[in-house]
Length: 245
Image (tube, rainbow, N blue to C red):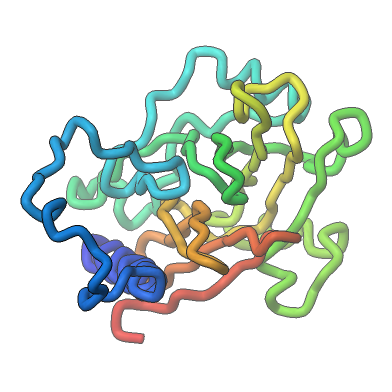
């Protein structure tokens, strides 16, 4: 069932990307096109590598967790945040090997489509707001904002009522050659109350064919999937429903 949900999500993403690509493709009947180039078959080794936003962790495999990931989190968000090295498995699947899903707390993508590597890090923290001023990050709640509750200070207690929302998602918008590892990233966000215990990133086309990395969320044991997407100004949560919706 989970494989079907992932497949459905990837099909939706692929169709959206295909539609965006078709709008920019050169018409086949263009008389000025040099047909001699059709005979040449480009070497696979010369094909450009996919951008960070075009990579799909669900298909390509998640990156290895760097040994210094906790140190990076400490530096950028404060020592109160602890990297979630283990997945919180729903009790009903505790002894079900069919639901032993590989887990990584780190996903690399291009969240804002600027061509620079960004990071998505899953963590836990007792008080997400404590380090906002000294560490210069913003606490946001895209899930509750989609329900009409815009103030994360008022919605911060929701996680205690729903264990699957006990994680926080740290988003680092990288800058320069160092990307998300830059000493002073472009922006940092702490997302609270997101409903998931399985997380991935996947490419998503936005305006003018630009690609960004979408954060794909699932609650294992349900048919619900959702995503979080950067719209150029802020992160928005969208309900993707189940495979039959």
